[in-house]
Structures are given as structure tokens and as C-alpha cells.
Amino acid sequence: MPWRGPAYQGELPTLGWQVLDWIAEYLIVPDGPAAGDPLILTDEQAQFVLQLYAIDPHFEGPAIRGRSLLNGRRIRRAVLSRPKGWGKSPLLAALCLAEALGPVVPDGWDADGEPVGREWTSLGFKAKVQLVAVSEDQTANTWDPLLEMARHGPVLDAYAIEPMESFVNVPDGRVEFTTSAASSREGFRPVFSVFDQTESWLPSNGGRKLAATIRRNLTKVNGSSVETPNAFVPGEDSVAERILRGVEEAGRRQDQGR
Image 1 (spheres, rainbow, N blue to C red):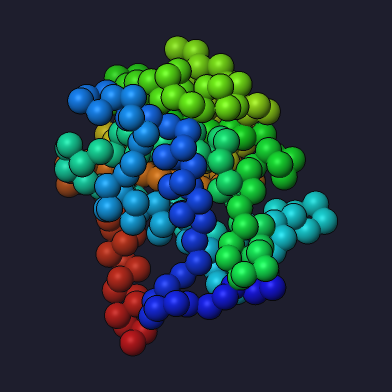
Image 2: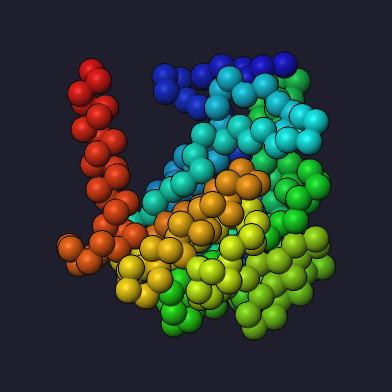
């Protein structure tokens, strides 16, 4: 059956509730006074997850038709820009593990008109997830909490994963951090990527080329990404600066069309 329809004005169907439940059940707070407790996101973090996993209300499903994946998610590229201390790193770490293991692909609707989610691997895809930056130091902020969640949370026993220093083996997939040159990443087919600290992704260090390569790779499996810029230096033509210019241009086109 189709989606049940909005219960309030502006409501969209989303797999975000299922992703939030998965995170709370399998992942832990990585450090601090609450270390080891179930990872319960703040309201603002949860709202981001609900928006990230929103589904086209006209999507009929199933996810696989013939040899093609029809990904009903509305958002394929997201930007998360928040001040330090907001909790970007544990949230992104949680999303990396959820994409590798959880029910993140829309597969239609149940008998009550609620969305049904499937794991990437259940659809025949390798669950390859990347945390990407232009230097190894940049990846540590997100990679360290990811390893804590993977090594000490319920997810370790529930999914028989293998957390190593620079990657996490998951059933029929892998979560990794990478700082490789763009040319060496051509052809890799991630289902999800985090672009970390894109204000430092510049033409001079290969960051712009790296971003373009990974975006091409994501389209091969209808994957998605989250970019996490901090304040950029105007005029450096960083990935973060180009994102802002693109958003501003899209806003102007929308205003002109009204």
C-alpha cells in the first residue's frame, strides 16, 4: 500500500525513526560522564537524522526492480555545520555504522502505510562506508568515537564486526577512514561517505578533486553523503565555500521562480 499520508501539515515519511531506534539499541556514548550508556541523540541531532532519511511520499517500492536500485530517499547530499561541542563527531560516527549495518534503504510501505527499511547487504550491495578528509589528523575526531562504539557497544556482538585501527570489517562490507589522493579512490563504490572539515579541501591539496571523485562513486549505487564544513577562508575556493555558493544560487533561483 502507499504511504498513509501526513498526520500533520508538512510531515514527510522517513526512515529516521528506525535509524534512531537502531542507534539507541546498538551504539553507546563513546566518552565522558555517560560513557557506555545507550547513545540517545539530542532533539536537534535527531531532527537532522529524520530529515536526512526522509522519503519521497510518492515512492512506491520495492527498492530493487530488475537489476536497478530505486532509492526513495529525498536527500543524497547533506551539509551539517554546527559549532564545536554540538556533537557532530559522535553523530557522524553513529551514522557511518548505521549505514553499514542498519535499515537505511526504503523498500516500500507496510500494511499501515509506514515505511519499510532494508539493509544495503540484504539488497545485494557491499556496505562500504567512508570517512574522508584531506589529512589523517582531521579524521581522528570522528574515527576515535566510531571505534569506541564499535568495540564496546552491543553492535560488536549483535553483528560480529571486526573493529581494527584503520577500518571496521562488517558482514559483507567495511567502514574505513581515508585520506587517499582522488585518483586512487576512483571506482570505489561507497554507499555512504562523510566529508569532514571541507573548509580545508582546496584545489592545492587535491580536496576539490577528491570530493568530485567520491560524489561520482556514490552515484553508482545511489548512495548519500554528509559534508561537515567549519568556517572557511573566502577566496580559497574550498569545497565548503563552493557549497555555500551553490546554496545561495539555489535560493536565488527559487526566489525568482515565485
